[in-house]
Length: 279
Image (cartoon, rainbow, N blue to C red; front, side):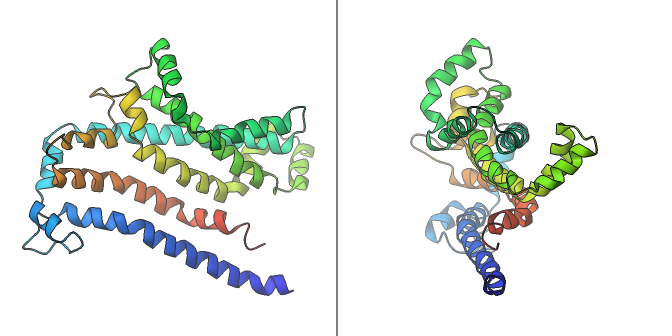
């Protein structure tokens, strides 16, 4: 009874902490967006001030839209992020289901092997990855980025989803087997709907590093046709002169899809984060 009375308090506290973290995380975004609508002089004179009429200037957005192929960069980032996210969630959920549902020799060892991917940065293998992509003829293709980001996101996805998969009722799955459902039908129709909060959590934590990454686009796909939005915005950063209006405008436009996806997943994200705290 005591734990039941504390549950609403814990839920409220978890929501308050998440809101606080959101405000702190969004403050740099606010600063970037506000300064993208100001003149260069106003940016350096008072970076925290709002873009009042005397400082309002759209030169940054005009430069971004007229110089370079911003929409192509935007499309490349959207394709890479969406495809990578799809494969991470699909393969990660399938692997998590297999590890949590079936008992076989090497089950624990396989789980530990996948967990190592969380502790060991994939960038340590950049040279080997580049050699593999060159051998496969995948340099300067979006496929190379999708493959790398899928491999990068799978360890965390398997680690999180496997814990949630274990909470799904065995009676429900056994009832599905008695009714003649295949393992694939049980996975897609019974298990996945119950772990949507965990899927949303994995999606949020996976998509942001992919969308903002500069390293692998610079190494694997630096051509004009395959540049992502993060790499494309570097054209405004020079060795001696930086067009801060254009940089801030490009970053502001690049933030929009991430915010939209975050808002879409936010409700499920909160449920996924607080699920273990309110039991």
